[in-house]
Image (cartoon, rainbow, N blue to C red; front, side, top):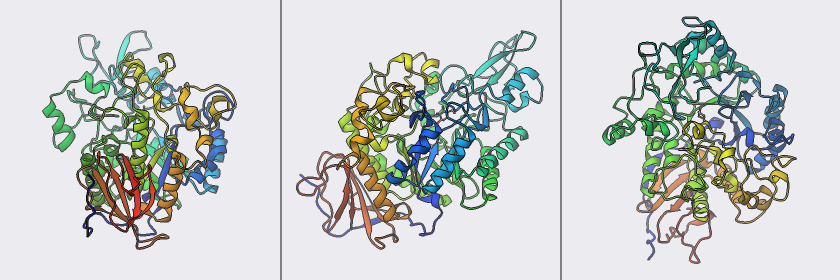
Length: 594
Ligand code: NOJ
């Protein structure tokens, strides 16, 4: 049985178009490079800046507008660079400041903008400020830049409150004072080596304003802001008995550590009216972003941007980060979190447009990044189970074929929606998660702090396959790779897909090319009346570009039955083969002109 073709199309408006001259970031497709794993120029097994620069033409040809680089700063790498020891220099493993300058100018010559990562919630414990804080002792100005507190209990032997670390274990570490006695505790919402700053201290704010200026002067076009919802903590640092809501509300180790009643959890997650965790989404963060916006607005053109990594629910709370005097973008993690479920996808799309439109911001779609299981694998897992934090060899394995089929369809939906989109390195190859990595290679602190209970994020961070028959699959000139590349990755290498009809790489190139020509990122959106049941169907009308006035139907079929397209619809692209009768089969998406 097939669904019938409607005679007349009824559209339910969702979102108004942007003007054709909207600023670049409103519809940009931004490609995330994880520098350790993209391209290695010197054969040490770790990717680096010269490696990236040399391969930038690949991204121009792919058709993205910008890159976002995960941290490349000086770091002891206890959290893969999200533990910064010097915000104004490059870690030698990645190169040097002149290498960064060369990367930025090459990218600009190729028409690519450059967004860098800013990590303002915490520094590395090897940062000069933290070393000075340890040396200076209790009550000092140096300690005042971080969150040091006396412990509880007769001898201060218990942590100041019950907050856990997002990575597992306690959120506090006790220091040994200069005289050798056990002393104060410092807060670290992440690893022990990532002490949280005290953002009530004006010195911290001044320092970050200066760091923004430093990188703007070097030519960067924006900043992805790490843990943007975490900088300010509730005064008094009260105990908290609810979930931590970081990385994934459903199954983070911290949530497991602090059980909460279902009702309380639902209230916290869904309404936003109940108590918020005292470490997240506090009102004070917005003043910080207003200041940063004015720092960026004072820079010469083109406009530079801030993009929030904020795991905040509901979307109305997230939209507060992108009010007109704050950030420009905020990752839509509700979209990323959504299972392969048409009804839920429709809900998220509706809410995303409504809440972002309310504050005049674009929606920033994303399906994969360096913190989550790659969507080509995630969507091949049992969709009735919570999203896992990594996949180990002895856990349920994804169905690779199904996952890739759905991932291609999901991306076609994402790139067909107005707004900005982020693409994570390797997803354009359909790369699956590495799920058979031996434990001795694992580096994610989550794995170690939970004693392996959580597999963690190494599986999505494996070095890129460029050339099947080359050392390290063309990642670098030697066999060395800092994480092992799965056997299967050779078949996904760039050289295996370039120019191959139907390959995932060619599908991404085609999608990005049509999206750019038709200005789909600036279009309006409306539900097509085929939407409903297992079908998600949006009409994107750009009103500009090479096909001004034409409308693109973006349709995904998540159901068991094939779906017939409206009569006259002209298929431009499909994520998989269509039926002989032109119908859209299960787990396939199309873009069709109406
Ligand atoms: C979010 C980053 O994306 C993640 O990789 C990192 O571990 C935490 N923030 C802590 O900086």
